[in-house]
Image (cartoon, rainbow, N blue to C red):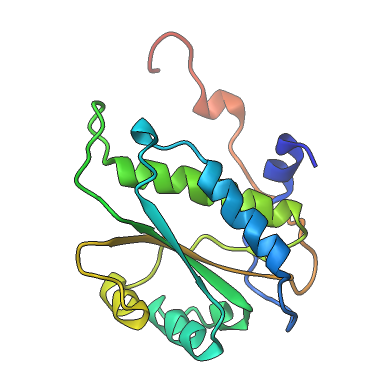
Length: 171
């Protein structure tokens, strides 16, 4: 699958069938995260793979009761192991680094025939407690991953290029 096709066809999946995800596919998803670019190539991240159903149920509750998360056979939690580095442009490196890695992971999941959904609506402290994450670590995002119940391709409504692009200066 080419990158444009994966990006244009990927959508957030919020319903999963009861089917285990093969370890080879999980490994490929994690491998694209490992290969992702990061500020100064520091790779200041850790990815927690959760397969235990009881733990996944707790994560669903900590994610503002988004109970569809509990349908997925796995959840991957993205953590920043160092959050003080700020890039010259003023952005915290960890948010950019993990956003890139997580985007790659979601695209790879789609390319492998899996569904996923970027979850940013969660309460960090309960997630840390559930997964025994130290206080100094930041939880940036999590995603349920599994086989979608229904169609993977859902048309997305997007702005036109003329609405989001300008040349030479901001207009």
